[in-house]
Amino acid sequence: MITKRIIPCLDVKNGRVVKGVNFQGLADVSSPVELGKYYSDNGADELVFYDITASAEGRALFTDILREVASTIFIPLTVGGGINTLNDFDRVLKCGADKVSVNSGAIKTPSLIYEAAKRYGDQCVVFSVDCKRVNGQFRVFAKGGREDTGMDALEWIKRGVDNGAGEIVLNSIDTDGVKGGFDLTMLEAVCEIVSVPVIASGGAGSAAHFVELFKTLPKVDAGLAASIFHFGEVKISELKKLLAENGINVRR
Amino acid sequence: MIAIVDYGVGNLFSLQSSFKAIGAEAIATGDAETIKRAERIVLPGVGAFGDAAEKLFSSGLAEVVIEQAKKGVPVLGICLGMQLLFEKSFEYGEHKGLGLIKGEIRPISDVIPSDYKIPHIGWNGLNFGKRKNELFEYLNEGDCVYFVHSFYGANCEDSVIATAEYGAELTAAVAKGNVYGCQFHPEKSGEVGLKILRAFAKIGGQV
Image 1 (cartoon, chains in turn orange, cyan):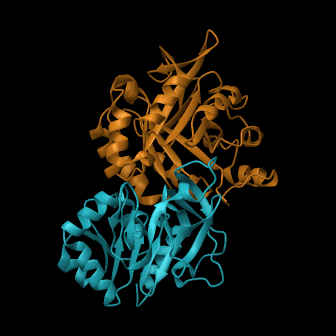
Image 2 (tube, chains in turn brown, red):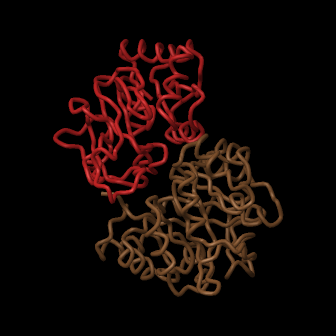
Image 3 (tube, chains in turn brown, purple):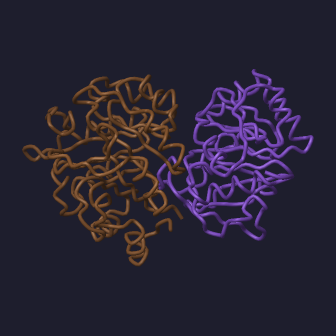
């Protein structure tokens, strides 16, 4: 039976893992290589590695670090941040990434998802969407959550999947950094319109929030979080034990 | 030496790193002579069957792999590489494979319930059936490995050595003599995956 995935996200700036509250006030946490290895050894099912400064400041990804991560860690690795062209896909895939996460790049170049899915396969394209409520509508935000694009998030996600996105990472800006639990309402709305795996992001503050996520929304495939793992508030091995005790199938 | 067949399809970086991690010498190569000298052959692959098969046949490497397999050299196909070992595939048309494993590649949508997501992505447990193959020597029943696929090996009952439950018992791995195939990615399956590669690196000789 397929298992629910627990995915630590490593937001990277200048080669170090950082995580801000509501994307503001970044705090230096650790080395991507060490942290990645630690997570892999302790039961993480996958790692997401975002260069968070890329879309705002046009930074290139630190491919040396990526290569180092990929040569020491043998679980699936998704890379995002600054992915705007097929060349960006090529660059990170050659350094050991298995999947590439597209966010702002798809806003700038709507054909990117289609082109990438055609060249590398749907399974390679992860469509990441920063989403926030505005006037009762789920809106797509750009530039690391700072800019309202005015686009309807559900329509945007549907279009991405139609164009070949193989997975969706739904990051709720409303719940991100608040640690009050995942945005179940937003996630449910997305699960209803897509048939590809949905990864919940934003809002995890405790292990119980993951239990709540998978119990309430069995269609959600994975939970993604950063700071609660980085600061050791939740240990992945203990989280998985709790999930298993609650009847949720996890890899152990 | 293990030759990882490089025919321009897929990401060989992780596979090479994985063999390095278990202390096995593995070279990614598209050179027929190097592949002929190899003690073991790994056939990787991602993407569409048709494109990959075309590249493998037109480069002449398909014949080399078939020839070496028939001489008894252990061959391991991974993901699309496993599918290429079959006789044919029905992924967007009908395409000929290497024919080392009897059976064909068909969409998983043929056998799984309609509310299951496609592709089958994620970690799933292996069921070995009556007898555990030597490839899984270091594994326990139910150990999880990482899958990403929309097509599966069908009509290959004689060769199935592991299945995974996803609304149906999908072919997870096959073996016929010295020819092995994994639908999942051992190089992305953590410690469990490394144990499979370690077992393969030992089959028919020393590491």
